[in-house]
Image (cartoon, rainbow over all chains, first blue to last red; front, side, top):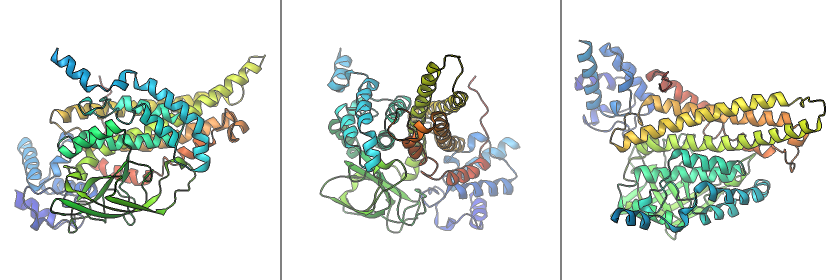
Length: 81
Length: 407
């Protein structure tokens, strides 16, 4: 899951982070993630996994690291299944 | 018994009188000097001295560090009270309180910051902020300058194009990149006391339409010091969890107070005119007064709702659940408060001017609202409303509007 997310976000022109250099738990905000880029990230994830993040998950913490994102996406897909 | 004596020992002797009562005396000072501060564009030294004398600079600091532990609503009330006398003084007091909230929410994990909070209370120190910098285009979540830390010491040089009351503050809280090789948004905040370890040289003079007494000059700032002066939390967290909300709430409280005073002047004008009319008619501006009252009420309702939301989120955060505080929806709501309050304050003052007519337009009458008009003109440009709206537009892609009325 994390690898799929890493690949997806690495190829995104609007998210200027070097995901190959970031560990699963690295804080993406500290690495330069802006609120604009985090929205782009959410939109890309929703498109890729065909899901919609519920309001309760739309916090800074959800998008703070690749591990957090993977956890959130798997939670949503589990619920949808 | 032990608990009681502990509480008594922690409470400062001067704090027996209610803060609002002490602020009333400060307001009297601010009323006396407000016009001169505005005309001369000078620091409201008498008012700030009175704030210190009344120990009002430490009201929001927890009692265990020598303060009075006031919450957001109580602090906002004090700001609005002062704003009815002098917009510049109130904005200075508001900015000090925003910096205080950073200490209270993000400084308790560090011995240095806990000790400095005790000093703020004991010595009534005034805090200022150096977040803006030449070249960042107004986005305070970016820094060009970087702090350099070596062997427990730091060194920082910053081209701060705005430090409100920088020449008069007892300490400046400055942002910078965490290290020379850090990303522009990977920032820290450091406390720089006004001592031999820092120099500030004025590079830009604050000569403006309004808020003239804030003396928000630009400075070349150089400082060295103990690395422990750096806040233990990253600035991204401080900005999102305390600064954004406290800034917009305390700024809005300032604008609300200014607008309320303009409203009071218009109301006094209408009453005076009504008394002169024997046929029971009201002056033509009377209808406008009702319109202004509705707008003032909207401002108040919005502000109170935001304070309520922030306080609830802070209570959750204190219990270890910061989901509400860091939610996208909360950020969008707080942004909306800034935009709405800044626009509405100007509208209320403009209506008051229409009501008061030429006596409102002239300086030095009991109905003058010129200073109110100029002071509130700063509101939509103090972090541009357009910048905030475009940020909110982005946030709205990832949040839904909360339609709950609290039932």
